View 1 (cartoon, rainbow, N blue to C red):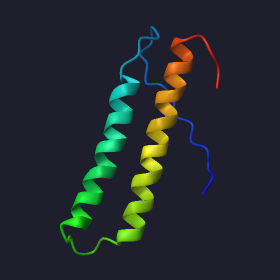
View 2 (spheres, one colour; view 1 turned 180 degrees about the horizontal axis):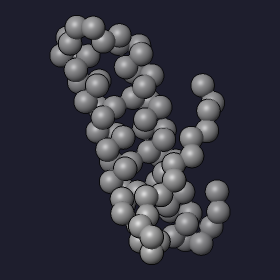
View 3 (spheres, one colour; view 1 turned 120 degrees about the vertical axis):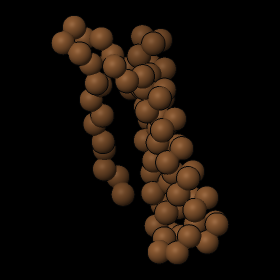
View 4 (cartoon, rainbow, N blue to C red; view 1 turned 30 degrees about the vertical axis):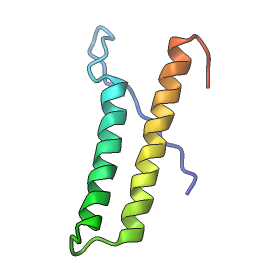
Length: 78
């Protein structure tokens, strides 16, 4: 599964950022972690392997957002 995801920034008409990237990456990790905890708690109807893969992919996306922000703030490019 090597699909690239483009995540546009949410800005207003003046170019002011409305959603902080740190909040987005935290949300992605929180959602993945919550799914994993539901499976660990025996929630029926959730496939353990699928949930694990989804949580991993959300964490990878969060990592890419963080790396892109670090590169941007340091003047580098990814």
